[in-house]
Image (cartoon, rainbow, N blue to C red; front, side):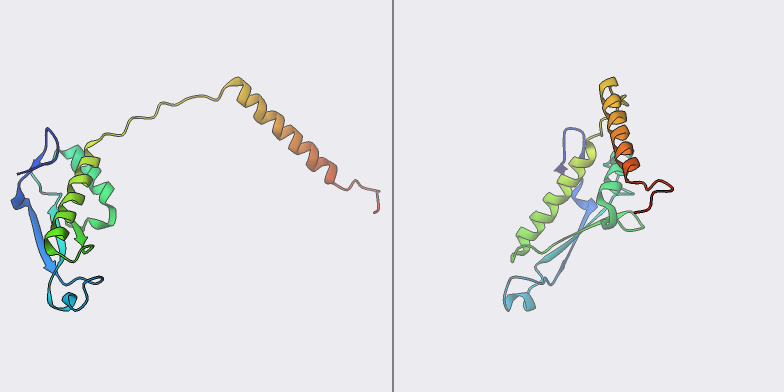
Length: 141
């Protein structure tokens, strides 16, 4: 079991890992060893996630979620397959933890009387400046 927080634990069987050849650092080793990891987690069908967290996770992940609701994370930062696995898993955990936090609702506020007055005064001054630029009829320059 992978512990996300006090309420959520993921079963390791819900996560699928595929190993592919990585681009980037590794020299000739890159051509021989499949060190990059593609981690897949089925967000849509996971029994471990509450509906609210599932919706926020799908929104947070954006393009990394397929149309079928599968979250795909790729990790090829390191030369070692083990470190790439750990990196991908850690990124998944962080993403789910971020989705667990509910956004605080915004409370509508009104502008203060002084700020409204300042705004109207600046509009008045700007209008006066523009009015001085106009050419009045009968005045040839």
